[in-house]
Length: 277
Image (cartoon, one colour):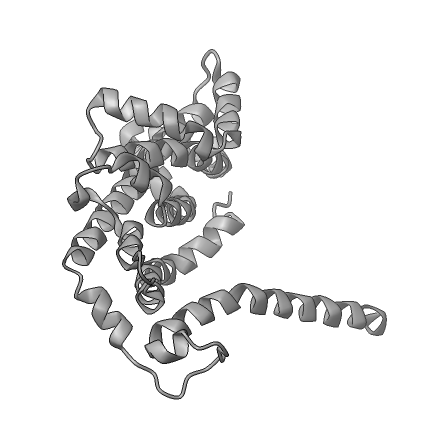
C-alpha cells in the first residue's frame, strides 16, 4: 500500500516545494535588489545574484527625515487595531456564544456579509464619513476603518474558541464563588488566547500593509502618513529610485516577520484549535 501511495506523495511534495519557490522568489528578488548597487539594478541583463552587495539603498531610506515618523505612525495604527480588535472581538464573541438574545443569528449573518463587501467599494463612503467626523488627516481615520474590517473575521473565529470551552467549567467556577467577570478574564480569556493571537496576526498584517486608506484619508498632513506612503518618496518624475523602493519595502517587511516569529507558536495552536474539553 505504501508503494502505491509513495509516487503521489512525492508528487505532492514536489508541487508544494515548487509553490513555495514561486511564492518566495519575489521576496528574494526584493531583498536582492535592495542590496544591489545602482548599476546592477538598472542593468539590461539582471542576474539573480550580486557579487558587490551595497547598503547605499538603505542609507538613502534612513536618511529620509520623514521615514522614522512614518514608521512610528504605522506602529501606532497597527498596534491600536490589534489591541482594540482583540478586546472587542473577545467580548462580542463571548456575548453571541454564551447569551441568547433576539436577532443573534441575524447579527452573525451580518458579520459574514460584511466580509463579502470589497474594501474598494467602501472607500468613497468612508472618506465622506471620516470627513463628517472631522478625522481626515488624522491617524484615527486609519484606525477606525481597519478596526471595523477586522472585527467580523475576529468575532467569527473567536466564537468557535469560546464555544469550545465547556459550560460546565463556567458553572464550576460560579459554584466556587468566582464572579462572571473573574471567570471571563482569569479563566476564559487564557483559554481563547491562541485564537486571539491568530486573529491579531491577520489584523496586524492588513493594517501594516495598508496603502489605500492611507492614500485616501491622509490628504495634506504628511506627518500623519504611514510607512507604505514612504514608498512614494522614491518615485520621482525623472527616474524612479528602485533601490530605495526595494530597500524601503524590505524594511517594511521586517516588523511583520518579527511579529510573526514572536507569535508563531500561539498562531499554530490558534489555527489548529487549542481549546479542548
